[in-house]
Image (cartoon, rainbow, N blue to C red):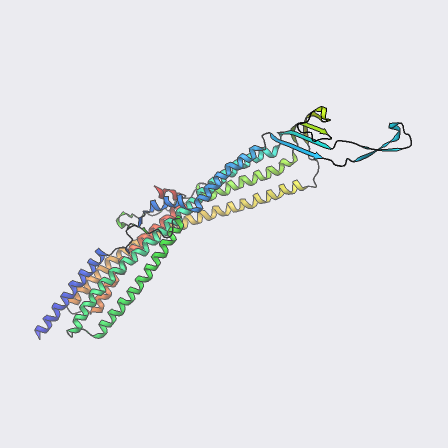
Length: 466
């Protein structure tokens, strides 16, 4: 009887040692899903810099900035001389007749029909127009420069939004991969137990139901792993899409060094200076543009003064005047004119006044948006501080939970060795420890995501590039 009892005790000790070896060995060997040999390794900084260069959204925003300079050049052109050349050739197969009184030709009482002009008429001229005063040109030039600044701020906002999206997607991939690592460790440990239980069953020390339960558990774990692998693939594709990287490009993300994460709580009394936020600056720049639009409508009340000049050369005759001389009945002569044109607006039915009032309404509506945005940015900042402080609390709780799960596992193992706990209790304790460690790792990565939101709320997202 004592031999049987000692035999069972030795088997329990052997099982316990194998479980411990599988538990810690599994954790030491667990790796992220294998990446192809030609996979491109991307740190967060490298992913962000790649996105800023390759993303179509970021490139479009930079094209808008470039286009802003062309808009300035277009407005400047209105202040420069406008020169045009004109040329024409006219053939009149039938000249129009004009009625003249016969007295002019010594035939009183008769009406004479006389053809005026020549069958051929050729002309070439150059015209010049120079604005001397046009208030709308001056206002338009200021508005164009302000528009370029608007595009520049919008490009900064686009970059910040891209940084936030890529960084968040990056950490989502890491969280998913960490879950796979823990699940791989659990599968390895459970497979070790399955081998032992099968051996016990063959020796009459375990039941068939124990073998079946472990087989079902492994099958469920493998199904979960495949689901996680699919999720990682989709998240990686989403990350590459956000970066502007070809979807077919294989990538590999370095494992996170959890020891390098040092959580820091947000200052409780810290306040946000909304004027530093790009979203707020963009709205203020838009307000400036609307004011220039209002000034442009006011410019319609101002008179305009321009200088005009014209010089031309004309040839007429019954033959094609080109390359002909006076002896062929062709006459050539030049002409020129210089003048000033003054336009004074007097009355247009109140259209200008209506446009000015519409512009004023648009400005007041935007000011309401600015006020609402200020409240919204402060709300996001306070929520980000609360979120990161809560993440730290969760981190501390998960750290304590890991320590407690380790203690439970050690006690359960000792009880199992002494015949006071079942195999199911030992497996449950091992799974609980694995889950606690997984939750702690996920909490650390969740803290990173909360940190991104706080950095965004402070308007310092580009610090992630350093």
